[in-house]
Image 1: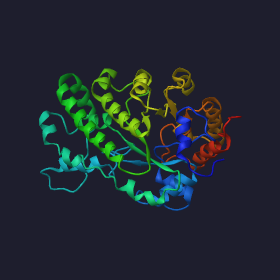
Image 2: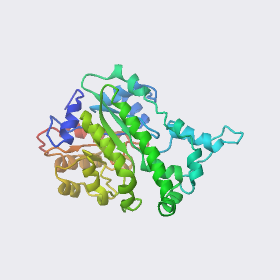
Image 3: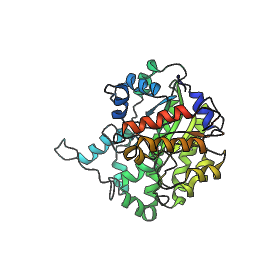
Length: 356
């Protein structure tokens, strides 16, 4: 069982080598779970306790978010939330939160809406946590920056229904929104290069439903993937791990993601993809992260979680190319004992060479 963080462990594993043991990897563990683990309250601003959690729980890195939107739902902490509220409150005498209709019309429906949107304010990204966390990082523990919501923010700002119609009726408007958001996220990634101890970029951008891509993949290839390629170039330049997250079934675009240069795909959604089939088909072309079903963490027993974790270690870990984690994230509604079962099983049985 490993006792000290070492980011090279994760790097080796995802690049298809066998390190000393199987690494754990999550883009998000809810603060409620972190608090239960440490026996004290952990908050968004308490970076020292967050590092303490990630170290003691057996991870080789801490994930920190930079960009216009945090992983998961649209929270008040996401920088885009405040910008959108200012737009919605324009000419209204209220401080109350105004609903942001992301399903239908959104707030950018016309070229005039695009021109009036406060893009300069949206581009003000906060990097303070990346500097503040530095004194707490132990030797060989690194940071993975989570960013890259380019597709998600484009359709949310336009409203999904309006966005889908605009792909055919207002393509120039769609192109401009993709362009602007891509530029902002890319500039944010470039600024990361100035910050010490960042060793990976985790692009979090859901592209698929359980049945397949949310839109025709031709539009991803036309408007989105070029930005991922720019991010890939930055990562290659600095030898940063380059990881991609999308829920759902990504079979139709998996080869695109590999060609772009992603070194690992997360989480191989267990509700819609077979991780064993993915491993057979991709071989050593890309690493795999995750796949322990989040619903099982919430509703299963510790014994069921242990058995599934052992199965993933036995079938996916040999030869490297795998980091174990949840099938999405570890939410506050996961059972703490099940999270502990997944984590402890990985640390106990994930010793190379795999013998279970």
